[in-house]
Image 1: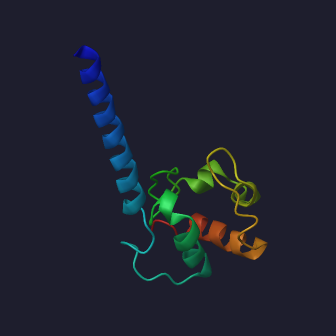
Image 2 (image 1 turned 135 degrees about the vertical axis):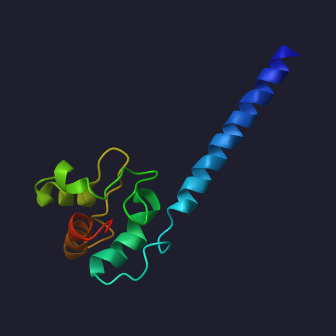
Length: 115
């Protein structure tokens, strides 16, 4: 009886964890609270980055960007390299976005994100 109860508890914990993960993904879907987006970088961010980093860069599955990205990457070229090549849990966007698009989204995260 004890082992069966343990398995049930584990199943419940795994189910709750999976549900929390799904809720976090949908809570960070692009196009939510940020309103009209004017720059090309904003559109690229919404389509490619907001699912993990949040509409306003508040983080979620990915780390917080708003108000932190410039201090973490004082040289924009370092940030561009990570967006292009990926690192750790960050996927590479070099095959999906042009160099110009990557530069636009990096500029957006450094100047407009989270205002």
